[in-house]
Amino acid sequence: MGSTMTGTGSKSEQAYAAVKERILDGSYSPGYRLVLGKIAEDLGVSVVPVREAIRRLEAEGLVSFERNVGATVAGIDPTEYLYTMQTLSILEGAATALSSPLIGAADLARARAVNEEMRACLEDFDPVRFTRLNQDFHGILFENCPNPHILDLVHRGWDRLASLRASTFRFVPRRARESVREHDSLLQLIDSGAPADDVEHAARLHRSTTLDAYLALTGTDPGADDSKETP
Amino acid sequence: MGSTMTGTGSKSEQAYAAVKERILDGSYSPGYRLVLGKIAEDLGVSVVPVREAIRRLEAEGLVSFERNVGATVAGIDPTEYLYTMQTLSILEGAATALSSPLIGAADLARARAVNEEMRACLEDFDPVRFTRLNQDFHGILFENCPNPHILDLVHRGWDRLASLRASTFRFVPRRARESVREHDSLLQLIDSGAPADDVEHAARLHRSTTLDAYLALTGTDPGADDSKETP
DNA sequence: TACCTAAAATTCGTATACGATTTTGTATTC
DNA sequence: GAATACAAAATCGTATACGAATTTTAGGTA
Image (cartoon, rainbow over all chains, first blue to last red; front, side, top):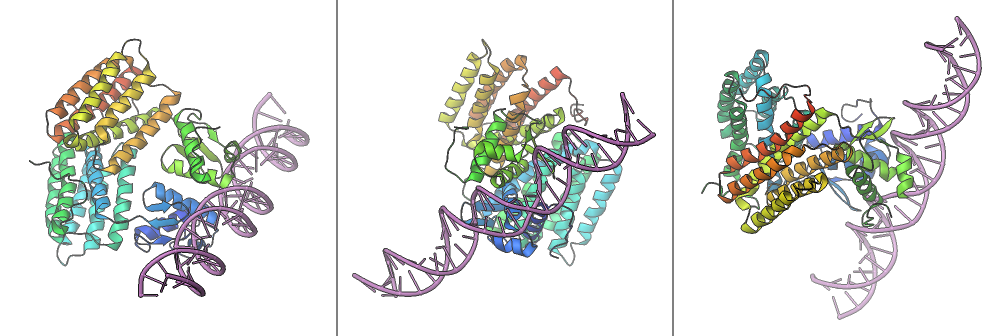
């Protein structure tokens, strides 16, 4: 009865989906210890399929695993967050660029509508709703991407961030207004039939500016000295 | 006796490593049916860890899996090849760019040496050796990349290509000489302290030119019309 | 109290076993 | 001869069971 039982797949699939959902919605937050026996009992299956599911989640980066010790929900250290955001900025930029020549008027209209919702959402600000809309917006820009591998990687990145966001909520309110405006520009750029390179650059900048805003706010400056790029 | 037994990890790890190695070196070529019982017997373990290993390989994209039917080594259709190459060109470009400010004189010297080996290798041409050297070359340029996620994705892409290459050998001999020259330019660019954007562009172009050469040779033109980027 | 040791409890890792599903082979019918 | 029906074999999926490794707890000693 837990978690929107689909009942469709094998027990292994069921366990995979259930644990993944719990991670993404925050029921299992980062650091949470995933004990095979407990989960198995919870789901009413034996440990074998649960173990398999957890190993798969490990391969996707949602779970970290240690031999003879067990699995925990993958952590939230700021460095990881930065890595993921940076990777996403690259992949989303590429995905948007590859999509852009294939985006039709209907898609643009939908994206515009979502962005207007975001704008409306700026008053009595609801970060969760805003974040969801943001994903919808970019999802529309991606969905025409002719390269499914890139899309898959983007989705995995989102999943990771969702897992983090569900626990520690990372959001820079001041950034929201700016973000909506950047969306406008991005749409205009695509609509004008700009070269893919320009779209890519703009889309990447959009994401990495969000990251910068976050860094500026928290003062996080993880390990590597990769900030000396503007001498 | 099978496949450089490390003996270190659990049976599950052992199975994972063994099957992966067989896929990468071509012992199991694309389409090969991975029967749990057979593999288990081969490795002297039971089916449970083998199954787990295969599911993990599926998550990495090396194996495709169908419920109640079984697993096969992931296929080689040209579309996949194109997707992977395109994704790699993006990720390698970014990885090289992020590395470039951190690449020291020693690294550059090593890379130069490898490229000279490649040049020497152009006479009495050995594609396998050339390919390995090529990976070494780019590996040197990457290894300073401060973002391990990107590196991980690049390595996964390489693994996929290795699996394909081991069966159908995809190589455009005429391209080799050109490639070595491009390496020279790339090294010079990095050495001159060029902006990261320039390095990224050059590195990406390098990979996608290779892809174009392959496409021109085979006439493969899968699905999407993503070639209209140079109007 | 702090620290070391040993036993108990927990949890993992995998072999085995068996039911469920799919595939293959064979006979029957038109 | 082709198509269908059915039986046999192969293979998958998972519950159960038990040994192995780790963590926790308890007890004793300086």
